Amino acid sequence: MKKVVVLLAVVSMMASCRPASEGFLQTDGRHIVNGEGDFVLLRGIGLGGWMLQEPYMLKLSGVAPAQYDIKNRIAALTGEERCAEFYDAWLANMVTRRDIDSLKAWGFNSVRLAMHYNLFTPPIEEEPVAGEISWLDKGFVMTDSLLSWCTANEIYLILDLHAAPGGQGNDIPIADVDTTKANLWESELNRKKTVALWGRLAERYRDEPWIGGYDLINETNYPLEDNSELRRLFIEITGAIRAVDTNHIIFIEGNNFATDFRGVTPPWDDNMVYSFHKYWNPTTVETIQKYLDLRDEYNVPLWMGESGENNNEWYRSAVELFEADSIGWAWWTLKKLGSESGIMNVTMPDGYQQIINYWKGNGPAPAPDEAHRTLMQLTENIRIENCDVNYGVLTALFGR
Image 1 (cartoon, rainbow, N blue to C red):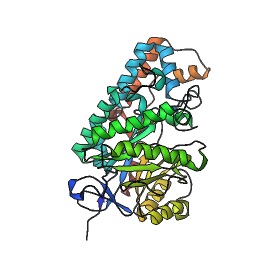
Image 2: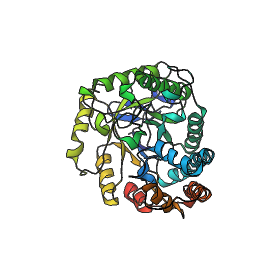
Image 3: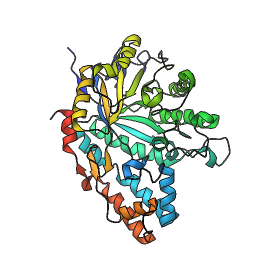
Image 4: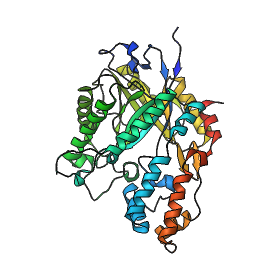
């Protein structure tokens, strides 16, 4: 009898192209298996707020619509140079080797990296040569470091394009959408850049067995008739990946925040997983039955790629629901300000509320030096050694 291996990311390879002994995760009918052919139950965490800041995680709901506006506000308050200093420190401190070591010790076996495209390639409006695609080192270097920490801990890393070029939907915060510019579905150049980015990532990581797989586009939420346009883009991205990488699993999310899979079935690749998300609704079989039916009809695995933002009782019940049907999961999220619903709580620094009040129009502007000190303290507070671990969440997820 094959042993069960608990592990959260999906690494893949096309089952028809590479034997399982070569070490990559792959699909086997309705299951994900490892290089030994053993069933893998994925248990993971999403690294939200690191490469892509969502305003609510920073207590900025109703203040800034998305990350681009947060940056503009900080630059106006402290100056461009000190704004850049803040973001350099943020990216350096929020996720470190110690975070990944801790996740391993707590029982997680993979992570889902929420990527912002603009750390890998500039917006189409900022390309040095209009219509061409250039590359930035920052995102690749950060991903390389994260992969090295995951490899050392034998944790799988799933790459998730959380903010696609232009933004993949009408929910502005989750994809850093600037509504004054063309989004993903309004711009052929944005779609071309998305395909090229995945080709670049696949070429770089094709031989890495601790890459769990590629989650092509997070939570599309856009009125696409019958989702055929979404399917076409997914197939085009798959082609760019498979041109250089036949090793890794490809994860496909439906429209309407990964709940609507009309048009993106049947599967078009031999090493593919359908990923649904689940928030706030009841933790009953009936609420996921349509996904179970999809799995059974097409004989492909399911992955619950994102859930959370609730209470511990709901978490416990949801995990029991998923695991009863051998469905792996990735929780959301690692760290937030002033919250007990994530894995770690970040303390608000002194002076931060004054900045919020000023941005809301409810108070005077802090002095630039004072605001900068406050924001730099925030980048220290997000370090794991300065966070409060919400052990109740861990207990709810792992039953201990």
